Length: 341
Image (cartoon, rainbow, N blue to C red):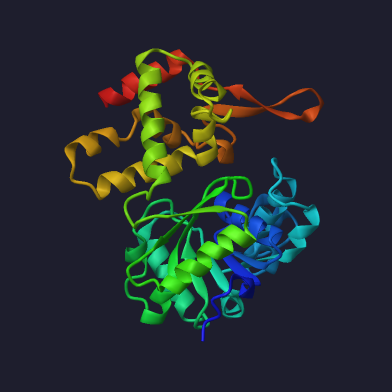
């Protein structure tokens, strides 16, 4: 029989060691859980790995993605861990050698790329080793939760839902819990209790609609702000000065927040709405902004790539600081050129 008490969740696994996956793993470790952090096996060696004579079969190489994420967590600013020593609660591994370890955990969190086919394939693999009663949640920012569980057993679907964290997971209060029609109400209650009492979050129950609640509203606000900034010829800094603390909002305002979220992630969220909507007005509102497409195509994804609308520069003494990256004229010119293509 499934233990419906949140205290019974002592061991967790997070699959996907990107910005969100690693951040979630860190916060679960903050809450006292032992965490298995898994990612794919690299397909090629780095120059350093070649230099020291490693091969693709070496454990150091096979665990590189998750291990590198764990190293970044130790240095993250703002700190992802309450105490740097909590990193010892996280074990890095890979989806080939360590998949069987999922049978030993109480909660599996999926945080891989926002592609339905990839997630479905992963859940199929998870079900081959998962212990009955184990919670399985997705951190999708807006894909159909029910569609992800198609083809899985009834027992799996009863224990499956979305737990949508926001970046950075340690500091952002909100978690959206999104059940499917098959999710056991007791599991929803357990996830809510787990997120509220163990992780210190404010839980909002959301319906399984495109982008749920927060991203649907937030994305709309960001797109409108971007459109108005271009219309009025504002610089990135001017727009952020108007849409940050001056409006009672955080200093991340609009464009700094876009960099934190990830410009490619925003495009995924925009696509989620467009692909699942037939309303002409909504389709127009959630059109892909040419400026974002241009930035993403050039590799400027936001903080995770070192630059988006802002970039990090080293100040005197080696401290990192943000600097304006894109001026008004650059924005306007790029938007105009992209619109003509």
